[in-house]
Image (cartoon, rainbow, N blue to C red; front, side):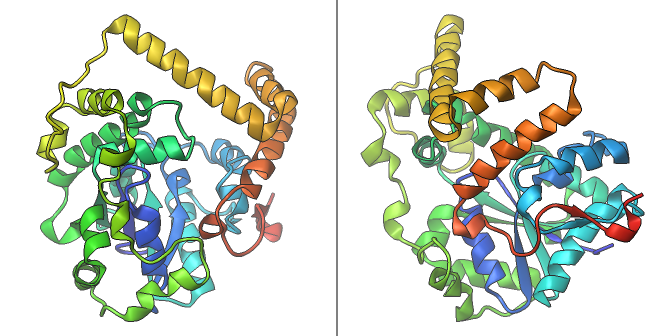
Length: 330
């Protein structure tokens, strides 16, 4: 087992992909894309899944399916998920493995008690604006919910860590003075900073840090959206070091929350129909109700193929498609 792998944790759109690319450009560190699939099926108490169920889960997982990772069915659960990081190390020829995990990251301690964590923190109003722009959610009130979930989980995880196991990096600080922040990160990881950490901009769709990406919410969000975000985030906004806008937060009542949820669902359905087509969209809904694993798998794989075609180059993994080690498949 890898003794102390590195995990980039925090809410989506908090700068984790940017930092992952920077780390991957370091000659001693490999940076892996979203590795939530190593903890999605683990219980909060560390209970591992049944291996056959986990293999089935991976067989239609949209990120794992294009990761190039190979399943060795002779391994137990901790050994198998560790082998995924080992494979990336072998492929890169580097010494340290890092991976992004945006949710359920507290479960990582059950697998790697000495894991190291880099917590990415971004203004929740910018996160809400960004996830809306990415069409991941239908409105900012729903979208910022993932930020609050991640920050609450981080708040529960920190007391379980030694001080040498974690470091916090603010997105605004990383953008405004990347060299200082990358020096901090490198010192934490026991490596030397190198200017090559910005080489990712040469062959990915991510540019070098741009200060204009900080505090965009003040220019792009409506007053109502700002109030909705601040209402949902509540005291966490100030607790995480962000200044309130001064506007009166909106804390929706039950009926208003219901309407916001319906609005989000309708917008997401519209987005998915545009991307996947009405037929496949409906088939996916039917597949969830029909107890036919073969049909469910077929629908999921077709869905994943379209999703993969829209993925940014920075999220496309090297290597093979989903496969099982041939001599250990039985």
